[in-house]
Amino acid sequence: MKVFVTGVNGQLGYDVTNELVKRGYEVTASDIQSECSGKEGTVSYVQLDITDREAVFEVIERIKPDAVVHCAAWTAVDAAEDEENRGIVQAVNVNGTDNIAIAAKSVDAKMLYISTDYVFNGKGERPWEPDDKCFEPLNVYGQSKLDGETVVSKTLEKFFIVRIAWVFGLNGNNFIKTMINVGKTHDTVRVVNDQIGTPTYTFDLARLLIDMVETEKYGYYHATNEGGYISWYDFCCEFYNQYGLKTKVIPVSAEEYGLSKAARPENSRLDKSKLVKMGFEPLPKWQDAVKRYLKEADL
Image (cartoon, rainbow, N blue to C red; front, side, top):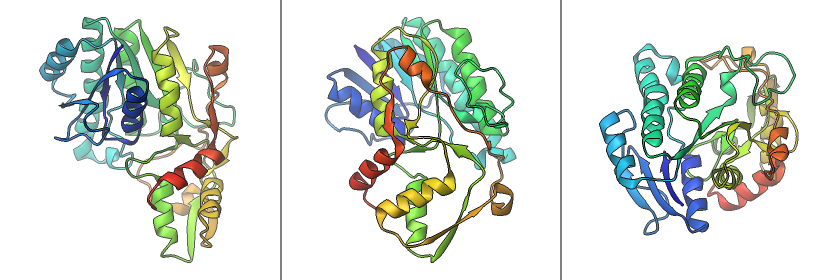
């Protein structure tokens, strides 16, 4: 199987590419940067701006992949709210996804699109199910990812749309890395305790995504680590404890925290039971994922 990966220099694209290499697939990875941060020497790399339709078509028609894993996206949630960035967010997350989807269809490739809990309105306490339609995103980023979902589902029949949340991985910045660095220089930190969800370790997620791509079990899925629903406060307390930091963590509401431009969902609970029903192995518990991440990360 030949696989084309976008966004290889991000947290997830990096791990997806490495998982594909581990399984012996022929991989071409891409990103907008001139160099690849994945496994050098074992991956063909193409510099690609996904908003350039002609370039996207040229690359995919030349490679003729059997599958496309689309990890590239604008993910700076607060910056997406700025008026000067909104056109770029649209170009990357919607138009870029449209380019990838149409090109994938032209070579009859299956496509896996990474989406987010932010497509939902974040209300209530019931976990969101993969086929829920109660969207109403709270911010520009969430709307752009929902529009990307629509593009994929309308263009292709052979697609996987996988919503994830609270992502952390070795290749790039994330909440764990940021808060550990802050905790090393502060006696106390304030962390939001009224937004509930579950973390996702990209190393674990990559395994599941490639398991999916190896099948034809198309449709919508939710994927985070197991281990229960928690707040950002709970999450921070756990990895501080595992890391050995004595910094005091103070729980606050999102309103009290008050530093975010973009509204965040209070309810990011994602129902993952469909994974088991479709024969996929769930991700390990997030507590174990944190332990493995801290062992591997240079923090």
